[in-house]
Image (cartoon, rainbow, N blue to C red; front, side):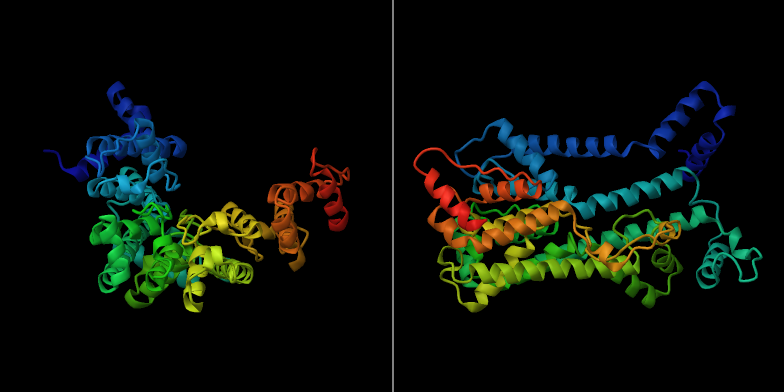
Length: 480
């Protein structure tokens, strides 16, 4: 059998010298080019479609927990929803058997944002090996040159070229991406392992949560692992039909799940950079220092610079704090949502709910009972991407090209959509009593329509026909 390293070297030579190849070798070169330079859209589309079809076939083949047999379209929709971590399902979760829950768990795990990004790193490492960047190099000289690069920079102060310019950048990129892939993989495994252990210990030691699983016919191991995977992937699937509402009095379980939500979404770039920094201080590995120094060159979107990481963490915590304060102020005395809970359970449940608004989707309260102003705020939070920051973050290289300098006020300006949402929430808060008295005329849809119309300076009045016309006109005169 041919040596794998020799095969890689031969493939690399075929790719580098396509003009001197025969027809068969040119065909091989085209295949290598397709592997090393694929279209990201088609690559991800094939990945998600394949997983969805495999999940659908597995769910259809395995036995269900009850005698109910869902339609094929419903099973396919559930499989696609699990792979794309959208947490939409037309089937009750308690219909699925233990083996089917395991299938959904694997679909959520392989479709999570962090895991998919790790696959991108592994594919990039494979591409570098195909191109020959990771072979036939002298690691000692490369490491020494890298140390020189990090410590002294690329060029000297007197303008003369530095010896560090002879460094093999391709090999450095290969080693750094390989190390980053290992770090992300270990990060995923450690977070899942700790989350599973903590969840299982809590359920085993708490009689109330244990009794819920017994009544639902769920295994403690399956529930703990399924919930951990779903929470980290921000999918929102829970093996119960009521989501997390059955566990709203289990504050310990909610506190265990809150960090997993953040570690798998908004705070992942923050924790990743902190983890690399700690590993670099402990191991003194040069490739780890290269990641921290040249995070942009790594091409990994979740690896941010120090300034970007700081601003992202402040933005995430700030948005959570604002949501938490507003939610407590408006829902603290709402018996339909927080009724039957003591003060500590209300605080933990409210915190869990506002953290879930950005992607996770696990509900501890009945959303239909929450005030409209809070729902509008939830809509705005779901609209925001995980990397959004409301602080002045800009690229230093691009800023050097700009002649006009921007002030702090320019960076703190909101978009037009942000102003519309803010005014809609404020009006919902101020007109809460009228919304309770006349929900037909003072609904969130009507208020949002009026705000959008006023912002566009279209001042004509509108009213409903029928018996409610007079009430609409009266309230609009008082309102505006």
